[in-house]
Picture 1 (cartoon, one colour):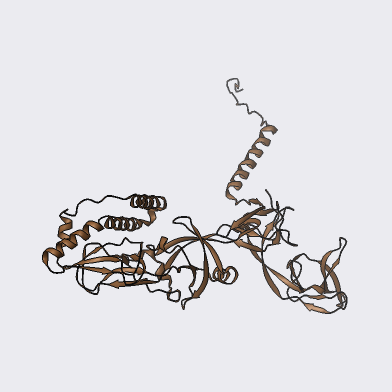
Picture 2 (cartoon, helix red, strand yellow):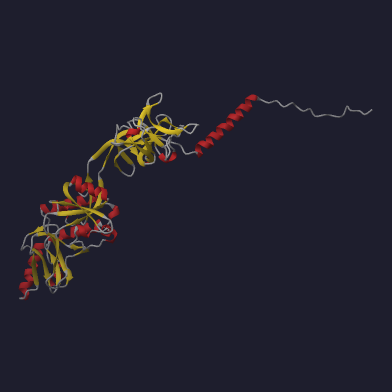
Length: 465
């Protein structure tokens, strides 16, 4: 008989299932799945409707149009200016001299014209110009630096006027012949020392390309430069009436011209305000322009061709909602006479023609929600009606074929836990928000909750937050 005393059999422990651990594992897996789904799912964000306003103020860069005439030189030589740019000259005032030989230019460059000092008025004007430039300087428009330098050079020219005149008289006397010609203003106006090709523009000449500042070129008329007979020597701006032309949408242009007529404008350069008379023009390319004509302040902006302005229009107040919440939906349009009340709750609806098992035509009350109304028609939900259905007028039994449709703008109200379309009437909008009418029959009320992004939901979809 075999000896089995040395044989060892491994003892298998029975499987001991811990219910608590199993429940914990299931819960853990469920939580992990929920977390993954949460981060992979687009979340519906609600937005609380609040009262607010949008100021319809708009900032535009406009082109200044003035009564400008370019004065050309009568003879060749070196030009020295005596009238400061931006100052008004009268008929007969000295504007510039022409040095035919260049002797005056050499005399001035040699430092023989003595020293000039600033008067109190000149010093005050210089400080004002510098402070204005520093306050309004924008690094995105570095070309303003060159305009500022040109203005400062014009100021320096004025300071040396008297000494230059004395030198000019001395040279003429010494030579016995007239070498320096004095040129005086033939008309009164504001003297400018630059040209840009925009001098004769009118509202009817406007194109979108003219507003491209990158392609804009200004030709400065520099003091002590050599000119030929017939070359531009200065520009004269006559008349206090002037205009700023801006490019706008046709809808805004019609509003400015037909509704506003006179528009209040803030000049961003100095924050001054003025009222301008509006006129409208649309060119062959379909671009719409509005000119705002002013009767003052021309001298303040006489050296500027492009001027930044802000239109100070009315402020619209209502319910402020984000544009991302706005959606457009189609509805059936039916005459008001076909809508009645019925059902257990007396809600609005229509008598829909259907057929029983015997094929006989019968009417059945179908509840449907009204979303908007006109004087004669209702906009009804299309979830219970189909195109081609017949509805019956309660009083006469007259039939109407459902088929006419129309679209409404609205948002999805989620006060009841599902996406309920509510029609809106937009008063004003910008790139981010719209202001809509409040307290309308089928619209929104303050503190209603709406879906922030209307593209994320469908009509009547239940909302789980």
